[in-house]
Length: 107
Picture (cartoon, rainbow, N blue to C red):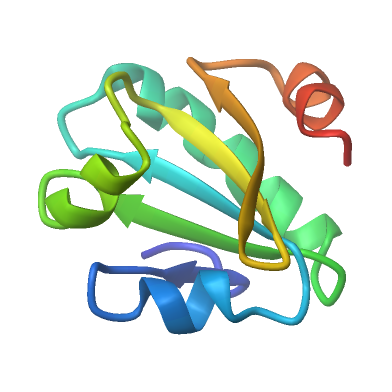
């Protein structure tokens, strides 16, 4: 996992890291084989650096964490979800440039 400010979340720690977080959490649902996911990854890393302390940034591999991906009906990746106070707040599907992603998530 690259990026010091990015938390790797799994089915096992999703509730603790995301749903119980005191600050908003951006979760990038991705997979190794997904080319658009690789395009979004540098954007996610930039956001993690820029928003450190204000927003937690996490990545969840949908292939190895199918339970959580299914719970949030992840049908296409990349999907980026903003969670606030343990609730799904905003969701963006597909590879977007940074400015568009920030605008869509309301950050």
